[in-house]
Image 1 (cartoon, rainbow, N blue to C red):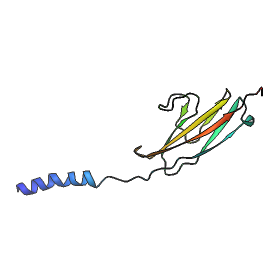
Image 2 (cartoon, rainbow, N blue to C red):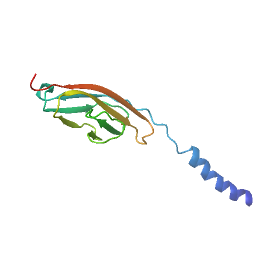
Image 3 (cartoon, rainbow, N blue to C red):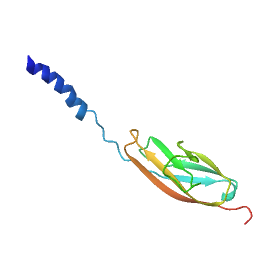
Image 4 (cartoon, helix red, strand yellow):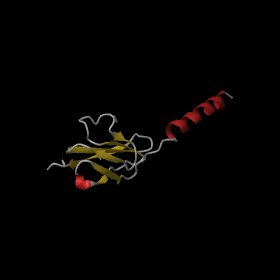
Length: 118
């Protein structure tokens, strides 16, 4: 009788620890962008997400030097739009996550916004 009691206690732990884990495929991150006004300020840029095997996203639009947090300006939309009001060279970062957020991929592309006076 004692043997059965311990078997029933051990069996659920066995299924919990090994039977429920899934290996998620690592996503790939990529995007395209297009801009209004011939990429001259003010410029509205549409970002088109080309990521694969991804469930959620984090974008940084390169308006400050920090990409370690999702402080504004940033977005979690799949295909965000951002309006640049100052000229400059911006590093745009997209990070694509799996559903569990344990796997991710990122890509950085350069965007140049020109001044209207040039």
